[in-house]
Length: 147
Image (cartoon, rainbow, N blue to C red; front, side, top):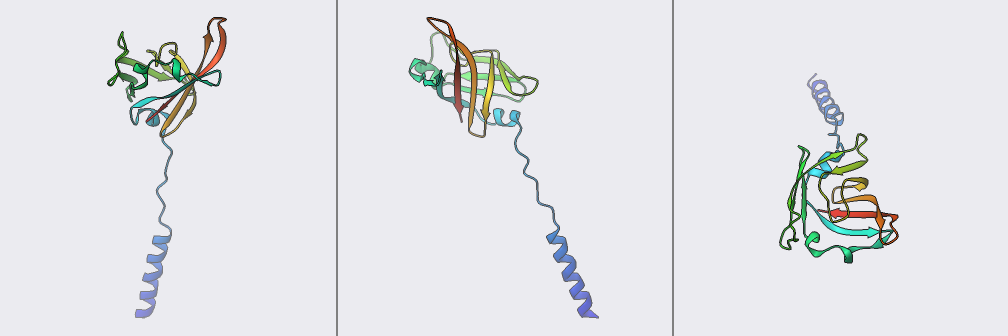
């Protein structure tokens, strides 16, 4: 009789452990991704060409912090622009979360609504169409940020 109780107890423990549900690893939301850490300039392309040489150095060390309350800050770090680009802004997603709308420019010439090309744990790619002088032709500009 002891053997049956012992075997039954063993089997009960075995099935309890075997049937234990694993914790689901739910992917982070866009809000969680965008607000997890400060973002920093990585690169800019215009019409598929590197345009980093056209971006003033004072923008390249800026830190962009987006908060869950839909506010944000730009910290200029060590290389300060004249006039300063530091300050507070507001942000929001479009209704279907495929665009990011900012109340302050990321860099000169890139402001307002950005299409979210990709948003990951370490990299965010935003794009918008800009008019390229002198002919004012509409071309895609891609602004890439990193943590």
